[in-house]
Structure formats: C-alpha cells, structure tokens
Image (cartoon, rainbow, N blue to C red):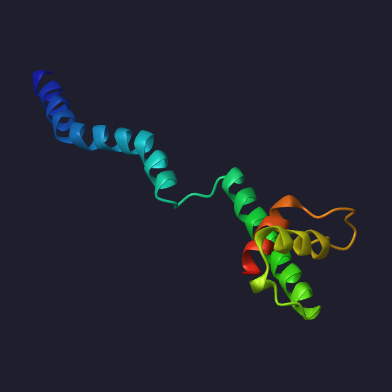
Amino acid sequence: MASSVETVKGKWLAAKPAVIALAIGLVVGPFVSNNIGWQVTSGMLETKVRVAIVEQQALFCVERVKATGKDASKLDYDARRALAEKWAVMPGQKAADWEVVSVCSNKLV
C-alpha cells in the first residue's frame, strides 16, 4: 500500500510544475494575447470598421472638392472646413458626419 502512495506522490511531484504552468497559461494567456493584438474584440472591430468608413467617405469628399477645380491647399482652415462640410454629405444623408468633415478638411491641405 505504501508503495502505491509513494508512486502517486512521485507522479504528482513530477507533474506539478506542468499543471501549475498550464493553469497560469489558461488564466494569463487571454490577457496577453489580447494586449498584443492576436484577438479581435467586437468593440475593436467596430472601431476599425468605423475608421475605414470615415476614411473612404473623406476620400470621396476630397475628390468632389478637386472636381470643382478649387485649389484647397491655398485656403485657410475655415474655408477648407466649409468646403468639406458642403462636399462631405453622402447620398441619403441630410448633413455631413463631423468625423468625415474633419478628415476631409485635413486631407485638403
């Protein structure tokens, strides 16, 4: 009987570091992989999609301004912003999104 207890104890002592490392990895692993960008949370995904949409709409705005023939690079900030507010309105919208206006006016420099 004593020999089987000693055998189990020896096996536990041999496996204990691996079990502890596995437990720590299961707890800490998701936090580490999230911080280095290997996981995509729904909030981060929504943010990245929103940034991409604003960037695309701002590019449309810039091209619309260029199509008017005005050289916006020589205008001051307020004039560029006024142009952006006019041309950043997307089809189906009543007013331009403020983020699109901001990015568009910055790209007109």
